[in-house]
Length: 440
Image 1 (cartoon, rainbow, N blue to C red):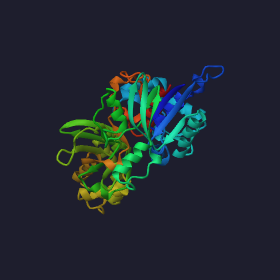
Image 2: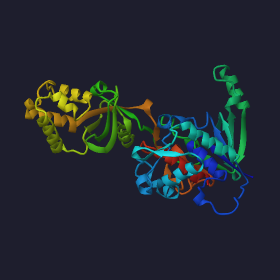
Image 3: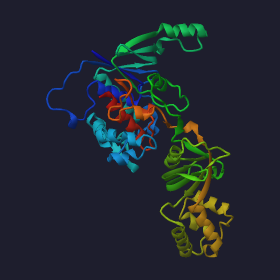
Image 4: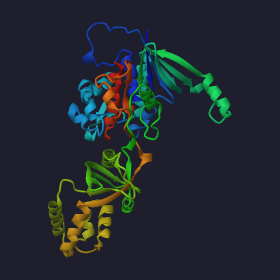
């Protein structure tokens, strides 16, 4: 019997396990006739609770994919790893992923920006489906089982496994007794193939997945948090905390060089900016060493479709339309109340001044305040990290199968690879695709 170990019980690991157990295909991909029974045993080892991270995705709603069906367009949503994913997405892209979930009993819904969710908007339904599919195909799922070592001997892989559930919690025993207890619940198992699906962790570059990869001759990039909120030196975002701009543009410069030009929804917070637009900028700039002394300089455009001339025309028209109203009331017809108040305060324009009395200089100041808002980013808000930028380098991984080019029957999938995408379902899409190809 062929034995396959999946190290890591996240989304990519489960997709790999289900595929390896004999059913990773959609109906359109299945050959007619009776299904061939594979003599295979698949075991998932997870040091915590399997699929626990899935429950937190999409605010608990699980944005599981993005309905971008063209492989090249889909790959463009990845600051790192997009080119590597091209052939993978040609084999199992967004459309096939959505079909796979629907054919296995999960109705889907598509929201703005192509974001795909379970129709129930409950991440627990996605988790329950994956657990049920794994169980029905005979996959053994071992929670609280940590793999501490993977070596290759005589053509097979030897995994050292610790049963954490059987070990008393740390702190109840002295260190020596704790180590002895852990060792007593340690065993070695032999497998014909191994899939490393341990996920990413920018705070621990020596994490198990990276350590296993290095031991087999693979290199690992440096890592950084991505899809984070951004901390600004300016305090005024805190004055409009909670305000969302549905469509804005940010251009970022670092040390005089443009490093990002992104567009999307922006949320102001008590420490700076967040939301999809801030996340995109943070991903583009994940490896830049910006701080208080060398900040990331942003220019925010609140009306991205309008240049200064068009914005000035709109403002003049609004002021002329109601000349007796206050400039504050007129400006509130163009932007949210809190932002209007902030602009007038920063530009020292009396809010009660009549529209007809707003000078040319003040009009120009308002236009500048809306078209070119400077923001100085001093840090990424690490506690808001969603994904890891960096991971196992891709040049020694076969992009059609996720198999190591160095070690036969060793596979990698998911965030442990040097792949990270923008917010909107792209990171889970990479997990499903790389996991499925690794398991087939």
